[in-house]
Amino acid sequence: MNWIGIDPGLDGAIAVIGDGGITLLDTPTVSNGKKRDMDLYAIARLLTALADGNDTMAAIEAVHSMPGQGVSSTFSFGKGFGMWLGILAALSVPHQAVAPQTWKKVMLADGGKEKDASRVKAMQLYPQIADQLSRKKDHGRADALLMAAWAQRVVRTANGGNSHVDQR
Image 1: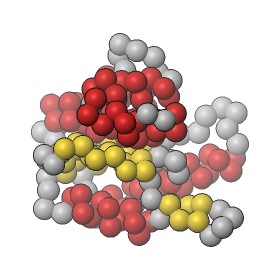
Image 2: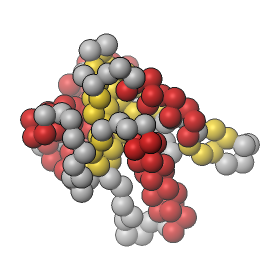
Image 3: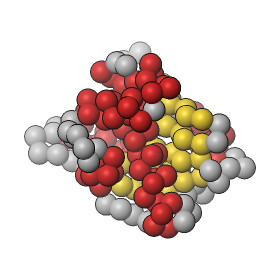
Image 4: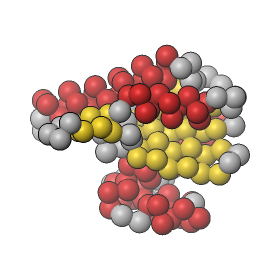
């Protein structure tokens, strides 16, 4: 079984916990020299490879706007979330949207909820890949990994690991 966690931000990541071990990948992006955006084709190829012939369940962070966040950044963040959802649906990858508070309540129960808390917890749970989480900017990788671990623990128990239930 492949358990996938997705931090849908432009600087987000995708993590896989499966029989083949743990894989951490930054969100594929493209740039035209002035602007960077998600590489939808690379994301689709990546998810196809991960789901092909594998029993798969993805957890994607259900993002929302926050007070004080700019209109442009809110739109961009929501756009990225929608792109990921569209690709997951088009590829028939079972998935579950999960609010940050929901997965953090389980995975960060004994620590803080700030970005660095995810990195610290992920390194504690998966010391074999701590080198891939060592930089401050690796918080997206850590979040994705902890969402995959959340799905492995919670979704498997609650839904047999094969469902599409919205946990927002």
